[in-house]
Amino acid sequence: MKSHTVNIPQLEKTLDELIAKYDARSDTGQVMFALALPRRNWSWKYSSPGSTDHYFIASATKLYVTALIMQLRHEGRLDLDAPATRYLDPSIMDGIHLLRGVDSSRTITVLQLLAHTSGIADYFEQPRSDGSSQYRKCMSHDFGWSFDDVLHITREQLTPGFAPGSPGKAFYSDTNYQLLGAIIESLEEMSYEQVLLRRIIEPLDLAQTYPFTNEIIKRYRDVAPMYFGKRAISIPRAMASVRADGGIVSTASDGIIFLQAFMTGKLFPASFLQEMQRTWNPIFPPLEYGVGLMRFLLPRYYTLFMEVPPMIGHSGASGALLFYVPTCDLYISGTVNQIKKRSLSYNLMVRLVMACMGEIKRVSPF
Image (cartoon, rainbow, N blue to C red; front, side, top):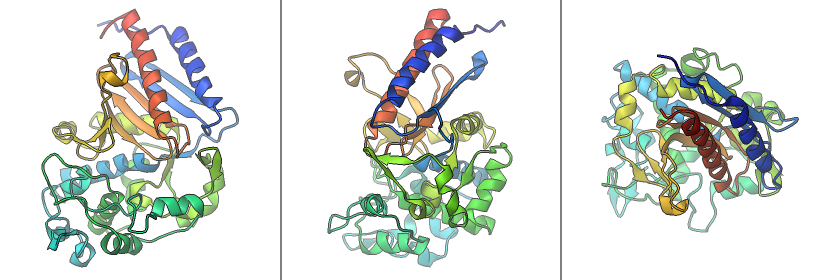
């Protein structure tokens, strides 16, 4: 069957003009985006003039962790419904979920960690009794922490959100993915970063993607700066500490390659992806969480009743996005490098998606 092609020059002109307006804003950092319509053999890329192209994808890292977990599941080495204590030293989980005198720590499953339905407290952004948080502290001054620190903060300074597996509930917790990183290390008997390289980065030839660690902390200056409002922040030790919950550096183009592999069965069986989307729980409206991935579902009353298609993937607090639009086979990867105004990247993403869909429908509907 002959495939139709979008009006590439007109679409690219529209996208260039749209993103340039965001790039010119005083509240965005370096703006880098890539889009792809594989069925129509089309791709587009934009980078701020003079940008490094490399940026922290922050919590979009969780998609990579999800892919690793699904690979181990496919190999029969991991059962999502098994308690995490099957794969971790029980001392790691002990006391991680103590709510109103009930300790549910040893019942929490791998699936609940992936889906943020464990109820485990969030060591990074959840406020402590004095109002402080790891997030607020590292926005004011750089410091590092260890996995043991994550466990201590979660156990001793925070309260779980709800009982594990409570129907209809999800609580976004970076602690969940620190624990998943530990499970990966336990099963593979090597560091999470080594597993990431061996199983994903090298096979997909993601030459511009790497985990940010203390060993390469001097490379922080080679990565696009993140902004908190109008202030550029320098937090290399913090970014080397987040690891499995947010420590990957990549580019918009590499993000497209990874996302296509994730969504098309190249990293793990495509049937798993269907299972991962069976149940969605609200986290930060209009974001919902399935098993290891987000859904961006914008209600019509947000858009003056304009229909915006659902998008699946993940975002990061740095302003990074990795999303796929199933209705038109569109892939989006990029960042605005802005931490404080997190709606910016979503607003831009919606505008880019709607521009693409408008041109696609004008030329030929799917």
